[in-house]
Structures are given as C-alpha cells and as structure tokens.
Length: 321
Image (cartoon, rainbow, N blue to C red):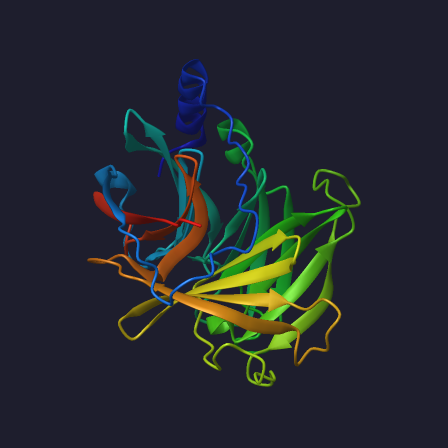
C-alpha cells in the first residue's frame, strides 16, 4: 500500500500544480430533478489505471465520491478497509494513494459521503455483523488526509443492527446530521453533533432517532419499494432535507429519493418522493457504490466498478435540471 511518506510527496507535487486543496462538495437543492423515472442521460465511461501493487485481494469497492476533480473510492480487502484517491489531471484520473482505514475485523468499508471538507465513512465487521466504527476524516488537503481520523463513533449491538455499510453526512447551521445504515440499510440511525468543529475536544455525535424500514408506514410514498442501499446521501434545500439511496435491484440501478420529516414519528420519518434509474455498463453498478457528485461544474451521479484492479471503471452521469 502507498505509504504516508509517498502520500506526502504527492501532496507536495500537487501543491506545485495548485491542486493541494480539496474544495467543498456542494450538492444543493432536491438532489434529482423532477422528470421521467429513467434519466435520459448518456454516461461518461472512464477507465482508471491503478498500479498492480495497489490492487487488493478479496473484497470489493463499496462507495465513491467525485468533487472538483478529486475521486475517492472506498473498498474492502482480506486485511483492511481503505480509501483510494485519484486526481483529475490532464484530462484523466491519476492514482495518488490509498489510505488504510481499519484492520480486520473492521475490514469492510462502506458507502460514504463528503460534506464540505469532511468525509464520513463506516468500517464494519462483516463476519460478526455486530460492530462498526464511523470515521470522520478531514479531506481539506492531501496532507490532512494522511492523518488519523479526527473523530470516531463506535457502534456495538445486536446482529446486523450496529453495522455501518452506508453513511451519509450533511453540514447544517450549527451542527452535522449523520445517517448510518445498518446491514442492507434496513435500519437507518440518525445522529446530530453538538457543533461543527470536529477538532474541538468536546465535539461529539449523539443519537437523534432511528427509522426501521420494516415498520415504516408507506401509504404516502411514490411507490412502496425499499431497497438494499449500498450508498446513502444527505442533501438540503429550502424545501427540506432529503436522503437518497443508491441500490441495484435486478437489472436496474436505482436512485430513490426520500424526504426527511424532522417533526414526524419514527414510522413516517422518511417519505419516498421519487425514484430514478440509469443504465450502467460492464462491472459498474450501484451495488458497488454510487453518489451525488459534481464533475466539471455539472451535477452528476458517479458509479464505480467492482474492484480496485489495474483497470478500474467508473461512469459519470450528468444530471440536467
């Protein structure tokens, strides 16, 4: 795996290019436009070269975020969960480094989200399925990325209940909102922070509420389907807070949009307001990881291939409003 020393060398190299700073991921407004169920958009298909020594055995890719030319994917392996970082330079994505998140048994890194300069990702025990750690990582620069997580939230509990296969993060006025999906996102736990400075000694997340898909009332939903979401994303606009889940169901790659009713009871906490599908190709699917992103100033959905191999595939779907 690329060492911290190598990561710092790349940091200095990118500084010379003026690319050392990760700018904020700004996804605002209802995450997808009102329109037809199938988004009539043509994907950009990209193959990314990964050094042979960085192609891990076992596991698969599970999350992806793309913002201002920086691509980050999360994955699992036989030994540890990790992030892989790429930079868009000269019209192509160039491999920068991998970052180890946690070792076995926490070798299963899931879907994640970046909110401004903060990346929230869960690493879980895929065998015991009773514990996980949600890490908050400062991605404001490559130098910060090489450091340990600024904050960690430990989860422990019943079988498949306290895992963290999909994590979403939203920075709001005065606090962060964190959503953590259990195994297959059957249950979503919501947390709020006491303020917005994770570097402060008193910073912490506290449980706010939980929503169980198996007990939810769905009469007001656009349809009653609920899927096994590999990735979750939080967004907010003047009409409210939205949670978008990405999943593969049969041959369909679905983005389901839920509105969060902050004043509702646990059974009606989220309402499904729309669903969309896109046409993925090859080994790229929403089961491997997908997310709301911005690429070349265009709101987009990005999806990733199955493994971190010498040729890793991604697709970028521009979303026209």
